[in-house]
Length: 127
Image (cartoon, rainbow, N blue to C red; front, side, top):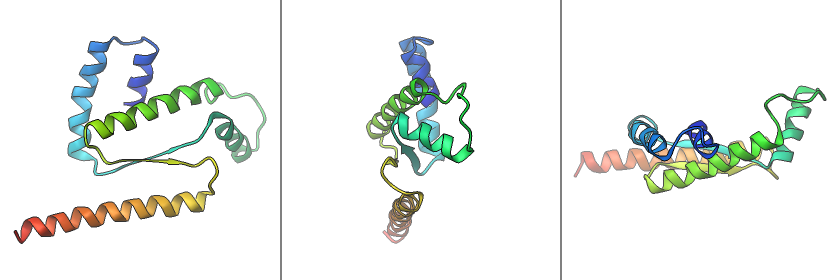
């Protein structure tokens, strides 16, 4: 849906086509996905991490400030859509955090979500 949103924002598809994609994918997401975990950081931090991780200084063809900005914009749009459609969507800003801190936060959210899910199942079974 992020790629569809980017295409829509770049006027690659019209509003009707965009809504058709949402009508198709939102029910599939609700049916097949329990929780969505997404991470976010600003463009500059993302580029710095990429260069550090790959130990390379050559210019990237796709990973650039414009594409990261557009991706982040669509990611935030998808968070809004998830809230509207009651989809469990968790967005983590990784800008000023270590990988370990994010991993702990993500694990905490997943475990809490699983706990709610299974308690709901037990409650429904014994009600």
